[in-house]
Structure formats: structure tokens, C-alpha cells
Length: 92
Image 1 (cartoon, rainbow, N blue to C red):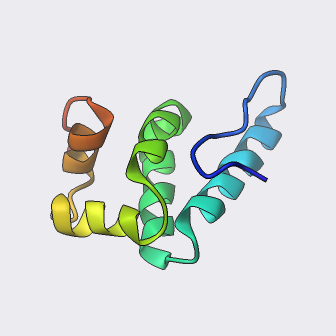
Image 2 (image 1 turned 180 degrees about the vertical axis):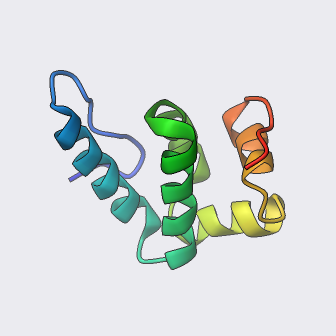
Image 3 (image 1 turned 90 degrees about the horizontal axis):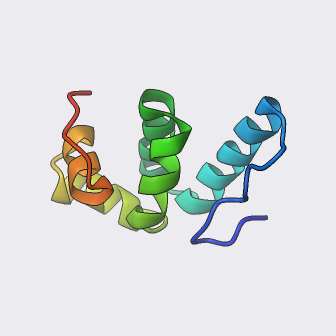
């Protein structure tokens, strides 16, 4: 299983294994908080694995993810990326 603050290294894993690892990471980080799971899944599906790996560890775990998304960023994924990912805002 993953440590809470890092993703398993991808290395020579097949594409299918990478997807499974991301799904396991989303489950682990979300800590049974549906909103956190939804935010992490949206990041991965809309922005890709590379952005997910940068952003997800900065968001924390469980309710912290949802609070950052909903309360601090007003439910705006682009603002979340800007604030915690250090990137340009994306309209999503």
C-alpha cells in the first residue's frame, strides 16, 4: 500500500498497472471522504497523471482535500491547481 505522502514509483510498470496504482492512491488519500475522492479523480481524469502526482501530495488527505477545494477555492478546480500546483489556472 502507499505511504500517505507519496505515490508508488512508476518505473517499468505497464500502463494498466499505473492506472491501478493511481486508483489505489485516490482511495488511500481520500480516507473514505466522497468529496475528496471526487476531487482527486477529477484532477487525474482532466489533468493527467503528471499533474496528479504533483498536486495530490500537496492537498493532504481526506477532509483536508475537500476543504481546500470547496472552501478555500470555492469549488473551482482551476483555482485549486493554481493555489496548490503552482501552475496556471485552467478553466475546467
